[in-house]
Amino acid sequence: MNRKITVALAGLGNRGKDTYAKAAKAYPDKMEIVAIADVNPRKVAMVAEEYHIPKERCYTSAEEMLQEDKLADVMFITTQDRQHVRHAIPALKKGYHLLLEKPVSPDLDECREIVKVARECDRKVVVCHVLRYTPVFRKVKEILDSGVIGEIVSINASENVGWFHMAHSFVRGNWRNSDLSSPMILQKCCHDMDLYLWLANKKCKSLSSFGSTYLFKKENAPEGCTVRCLDGCKVKAECPYDAEAIYLDNERIGARNGNTGWPLNVLTEVPSEESIEEALKTGPYGRCVYHCDNNVVDHQVVNLNMTDGSTMSFSMNGHTADFARHAQFCGTKGEVKVTMGSWELEDDFIETMVYGSKLQTELIHAGDLSDNFSGHGGGDIVMVEEFLDILLGNREESPSITSLERSMESHYCALAAEQSRLNGGAVIALDDIRE
Image 1 (tube, rainbow, N blue to C red):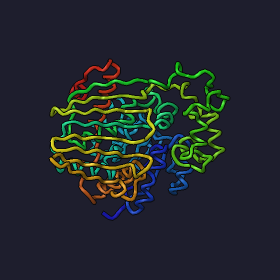
Image 2: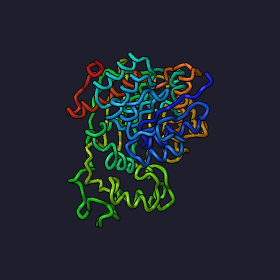
Image 3: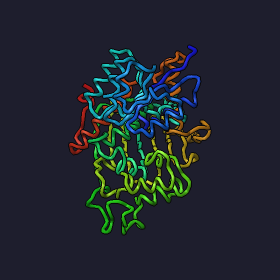
Image 4: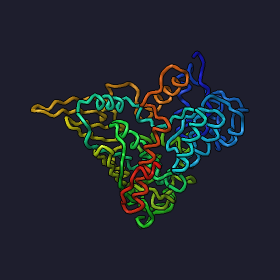
């Protein structure tokens, strides 16, 4: 099929504007953005100029865009968590295929409804579980499927969110409050629930979970701190979460060191020392971490019992120095360890160990698998390209594609984990959630 896939982009936040839209530049022969929508007029103007979108195809909201007849082949829905289904169902009924940012919804009824509508409309929906598409985890999948470590008996996995990422996104940021967005275990870790079940080819029978907001609450505020970091806080010198130290002075991300990418581009459309200072004075990211309206957990553990009797232990850690996922797959014949997402690429690896009188070990460094690890370890852009190729007829839909129905299993597990946590670690049967 010799044509481009046209895209209507609903939501111009970091994921929409700075991640998925870039696929139009990476694959100009496959994709063209023809319409955009966002409640922030400055973002609309910037994206319109960058991608040459005519004024009549720039909309002040996804709702306004959806009042129009079908504008494109696909709609990329990258609005806020609780808006996804509200935008997705009208889009499906208008005939759009969808690239849908995760999570689909924190509401089980909405999850079930969108699956039903997608079937009725016969539309393709890919959920952005981008980790499946990374070179590292695809190699892990290849190793596990080869049978070299036998049958997988247990999985030990953790997501180290990282101390400042936790504060940025889940204390000060858009995903701080589950009433406005989603529970932490769904918003951040539906990636993990999807990834490890797919890698090991497992299905969860039941689970239990514990977790809480341990640190980031008013009763832990040190004496002398202020509601905003730049309002004369007396303890900022000792506080690792001081907003000025993170967003202005930090060597890796601070504006005073010439940085302009994530997370600064979340604070303001055009990051500079001056614009970041102003954002810290007036916006949510300048607030003291002990005086925010957050309620999501900063640590959580989940124990999963699989249908075949194997188990998985998963931990979400908000209080870590590194920003990475670590996993250990323990099999009847061997073991695979993997680390992905570290600040330094050389720290990412896959190690396979096969049991025997002489332990056989193979170590693969992430850098040997690809020369592009931008965007979730290289997964973002690959996911978009594979979706485009399916729509263009250039490839068949494979089991690794994160279709809507496949992605639901991760949501069932995450929502069951939150239900368990809120009920003192009660064991939740997954069939009760699925049905």
